[in-house]
Image (cartoon, rainbow, N blue to C red; front, side, top):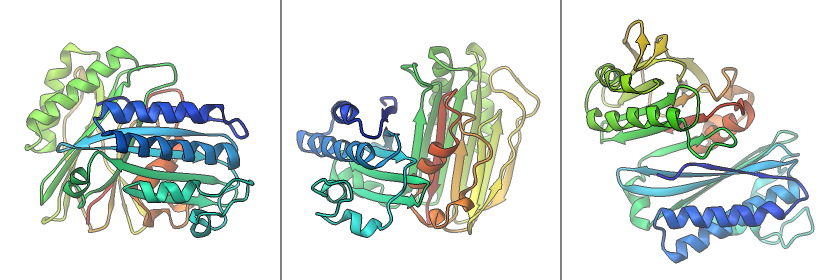
Length: 335
């Protein structure tokens, strides 16, 4: 899977708009989108970047490709910390503009994207999320899933030392986030090895999977790894982690952190142990590498907990990314 891309956009400077378009089309082609889907992706990225340049106080476009059970898509995020959008419903209507433009950008995105949402707060900026599926079949195959993920390498690196994946059945979902020690190719090697073992053993309990990964990573520099398993019929979440990949459950607007053991998977872990938590319907699972600061708080954004998980991931990445390490955040909700 191609690496996520982060493209800085400066207010009043449209020069990066074309760059965002080119990179979005390039990723769409790499994901085997047909020419029509590639064109739609390019339009969405163009309009999203143009919206930041016209209205934001600087920001970035995040291009986040994903693959789950063979379904493939590309998530496009436009993040800024500008003055915000006072009336989102009006802003999406064609012809509405506060910057002297034709006012068709957000409307075009809403028509072309398979999923589309905006979250904005006065004086705190805007987060836009648009998802393009490779095909209509890809969209219908995962229609029961609601998730979002951002996994961005540190600036200047071509490879990501973080990695994530997930597998789902009708009654069970299991997720992994692996953060290779440091960043760059050796960190990426460790994280990808963890993902490889995860896929080979994903039908097992998280504690057992983590033990297998611990054995496999001895030949690498090691990683922080966390695995979360949700058993819906049982109302249980099982979590096993070692190192500083955080896990939390967001329910009724309140976040509850899960326990991860100290150590580096593949080298020294005092004890590999899992913990069980109650899982309520409509809860959110959050998993974050240490590229995201620990002081995040969804409650400070009124209404955010009722929005698409991808928007929650986007806001927390925008406001709490440390910017000095690879950064990954997964947010998932399955009713």
